[in-house]
Structures are given as structure tokens and as C-alpha cells.
Length: 87
Image 1 (tube, helix red, strand yellow):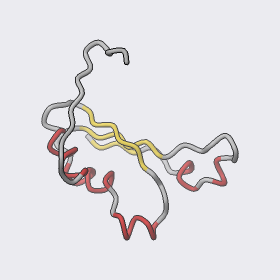
Image 2: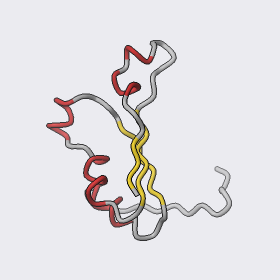
Image 3: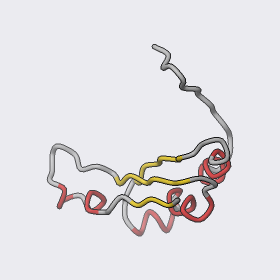
């Protein structure tokens, strides 16, 4: 595996939202993806990106799940979501 210049890897143990929010102290911009699986799974599993909207300690950029090449964007509700950012 090649190393990327100026990139540092880090692994932590804990709840994703809490750990990413705390990581916001060390960065200027936190970029996360949105799975966009719908309201039922979100209710059961929670939403890390929604947690970060309230608790991130830096600017936040959330990217929606992209449509696959097998279907159009209209077949994938998450592809229609807008990208939202908080600063």
C-alpha cells in the first residue's frame, strides 16, 4: 500500500458520532457521507450525520449517497437529497 503525503491514519474505539465530533477539534472541515437508507432504518440505527450537525466542533460537509450506474437518480431517493453544510 502506498503512503499518501501529509495524510495521517487514526483508529479509535467508541460511538461514531461522538468520536467524529471530538475529531472536529483537530480539523477545519469534517466531510462525511450520508447513507440515505430512509426513515425506518434511520429510526432504528440513528444518523451519524444528523448527530454531527448538532455536535461537530468544526465545519461539516455531508455528501448524499450517490446513485449507482444501474439506475437513474430518481430511483435512488438519497441521490435527490441536497448536499448540506454547516459552519
